[in-house]
Length: 118
Image 1 (cartoon, rainbow, N blue to C red):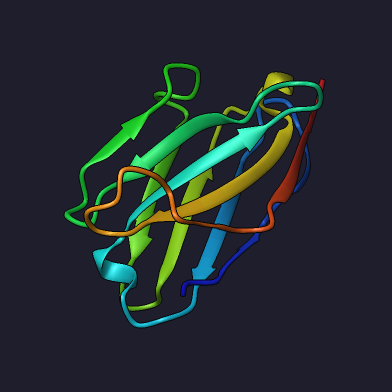
Image 2: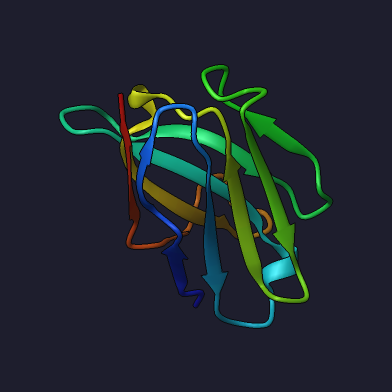
């Protein structure tokens, strides 16, 4: 079992930056693929970024070049650096963990609110 706790959300003006963190419990963090997702009011949850256990990354087109996903396996922590924020980035952001061999994300955090004002 893995528990995920996000932090770092808040209110920021358009063009500003925030860094989200996701602290994971357990000793197997380094073996998990990790992802960030977001859900805006009235919309479906959508993929934001992913980092594999080997470090390779992937991003949604809407955030490419502005967001950076990273991980610190020694601290069992996932990060999302968000720059040049836009009002359309406003959402609840969730981190998720995918067990080796799984075809889905198995564990989810409770989410952290990001609000970008224009």
